[in-house]
Amino acid sequence: MKKKLIPIIAMVLIAVICIGIVLAMHPAPKFKVTDPGTPVVMTVNGEEIHAKEYASMMVYSKAYMDNMMTMYGMGTEIWDDPEMSASLFAQLQDQTKQQVVYIHTIVDQFNKAGLKLGRDKINAMEEQKAQVVEQQGGKTMFGIWLATLGFDEEMYDNILLVSSYVEALNDYYFGENGKALPPRDELLKAFNENYIQVKHVLISTVDDQGNALTGDALAEKTALAEDVLAQAKAGEDFDSLIKTYGEDPGMTQSPEGYIMDKDGNTLTGTMIEEFNKGSWALEVNGISDLVKTSYGYHIIKRVPLDETKLDDYAAAVASIVKGEDVSFNAMVDQWMAEAQVETTEDFDKINLDNVFDYILPGDGGDQAGTAPAGGASGTDAGPADGQGESNPDAGQAAS
Image 1 (spheres, rainbow, N blue to C red):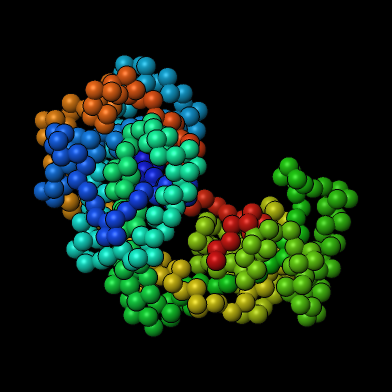
Image 2: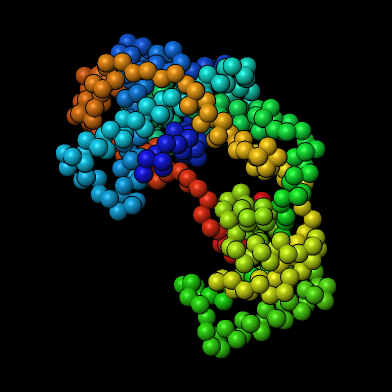
């Protein structure tokens, strides 16, 4: 579970954007020191972190942790076990510290790069803020709602700024002509050598419950697949065949096809092995014979690689060129590993019994641990810490 919790703040930021929680910003928004009147609990590269900020992140991190435990069948009553509670709190404490380090590392790197947010980004924040305040029933209810999450408007301003900073840094290093990327011609060459683009007609051989067809039902589908294959080989328009016979919703969502590397990895997952092998065996504009997978029969056509999609794959292609991981996540990991982090004697004074006292002084001690299990959105915002196997008929398109 610890690995899953490490990128909590990244998912907090995504969840914030997805539900449109945006705080009012001044024309030139800046990251604010959160309540300097509370004790300093840690420093990041010499910058003082105050108790209120740390406590806010602890409330949110615990809510996320509870949600993850529920997802994996572990009830939150585990916190009532003294031994387990001590172990979980140590983990929560470490994860909260890592989220704070993440925030301040991003801010530091944004400033070092000399970046600034554009007016369009600021305007978008202000427009979305107004919508969310209205959804919550006005400013008063909006503030109450934020308090249940362990945040106030200033803290959320900071979180949203970090979200924008992440986007700006990612674009600065990995966007078109990004600072961390090899020359464009090297990227394009590697893209063409290591990626292909394919379309396919899927004739499904499973029922609506995912059970494999048998007997006459299977025979009927096999005959249909052979007929569609014959039409494709005879030169029938492949897109028309997909539209008429295809049962992969991904081909509707991404009619240009799937872009994948030699291991079948797309932007969203990994193609099933038989499909990947069948695709890579083709020349450009070649059409496969029937490729059988657990999902059915696939008739695959390799199409020319859309080079305009290179930017979507730039970090992955750059990793191939350089022979090492040069993704934004890897860069952030390095920044965090190099950060000088120290804690003070007040760091260990914050616990689940008093955490709200640092957020809402004199008003929140009995609220500790009551943040909603789903965090800001009220639903699971957990990170996908790896790509699971995808399949062409599951609508998980690569491009």
